[in-house]
Image 1 (cartoon, rainbow, N blue to C red):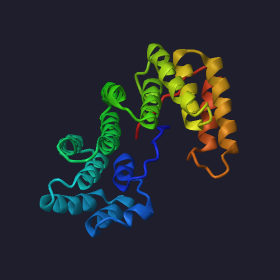
Image 2: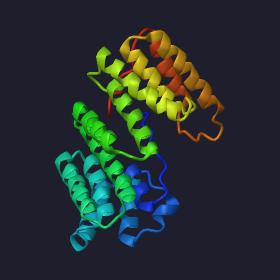
Image 3: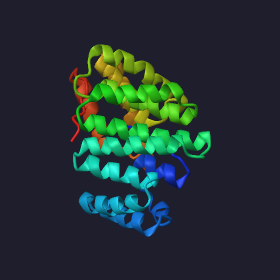
Length: 249
């Protein structure tokens, strides 16, 4: 999924936003139980990680990092109601915490991303859009709004059940995202191309997907974590007059 996750510097926010894609140097700063759980998650042993985290949570019920990690374990194991319950608990903890407004916003962003991912796995695509739109209304940080604009556009354009009308709506969100980086972020331009294709404007989709391929080709360090082969495959889909539909695993 071509979602754009904003780079946040706080260790907690990195964990909350990426949930499973931890940065090694950040993980090293965590307590042993968190590190153990991460190691298990890293090799796909979500049952073991969940047990480690549950033990920690029983002793520290307000440990929201552990709760978010356990929510990811539940999501991977398709225990979606438990995952949503943990996320809701985190939201309550943060709401009553003494953290600054900016810190809370970062964590709420991670909560939104997690909820959307859970809903997508549950095939509740409209709910993924709904929670992201709700967050966009209250988000203040431009980088966070940029992330949400892109994600909403991607959901509206590529998830099963997307329509020409949802594609037209997606274009507006995608353009707002692309403007933020002057159309230089290939992931966001990729979303814009998908939106145009869904809306039925195939020529625009082809035009922007070619821009994506050019940007990725010039991204020598792969800073945007995009695979050029996947970008070219989407271009072929558009050339064949079709929209791209992402089928979640």
